[in-house]
Image (cartoon, rainbow, N blue to C red):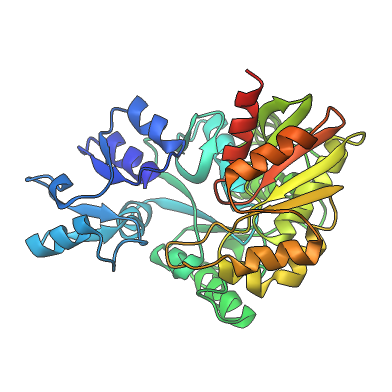
Length: 388
């Protein structure tokens, strides 16, 4: 939503909005761009004069008071996917899709396009460190987006080029079977010819990347292949990739506590966790790898339980923070507790419990990773604050 707001503002559209009271990095981005927003939802927040209202898909069919007010007044109402599609489909659209690595691959390709002088408009699912934002507003025909498969969202788009990182079953709350998940990707990829599809090359090149891990080498190779497909000089593409300094919540260093480095990572699928831990071992060969994992959604945790147990058996020490449920989930965290039980790991119902535990147990021989797509990073923030 914030990235789309930036793109609209860059096209001289007056933008304002409402948001939850939970803190996100996008709060500071919106403030820097002077895009006004109100924390909390109320019918009174809907302006008296407005041409169109854009909403997150999470609110489109809910009793959110602003959505109800918009419908009552008969105002045009779109999801941001609908709105973005109007711009994307009218230009040279490049869509990066896949189960894992699409944010990083999108950002890498965006940096390449920028360094090649193509002045792209880019939307990424996390803050790109080089831009200080999750969007870049360009003036050329090139639109590069991270295209999400959840709820078939990417079927809004008609790209000229599709970049596929990988496909592995996920989002069991929407896709009941692996076949239904794969079929959604097939529908999307059928929108372009084979020569306009980019996959991982059979032979990987090695790049001197700032960001660690074999998975990032694969991401870089996919971005590089896409750049070559667009006619970009290989030397320019390589130089851009080797200058790429990462995303927020991807192996992000938060500080330290008791001499232990603290890192945050968005990995929330077993395959992503395994890739992260491999990179952590390479980066910290002499340290004890400690993981605080926060499951993301009850449904994913239940469906992929055995895979989570396998992946989370790899660190030297692991603890589980209560599950970060989706807006559609409520109730007791039975899945998070079951995962902790299977791992014989501590379970923390609150951030405070986790902070107290790691404040006592971390030493300079450790490195702590807060892992998951929820708000476990707050534990790191509080541990860093205890040092001051």
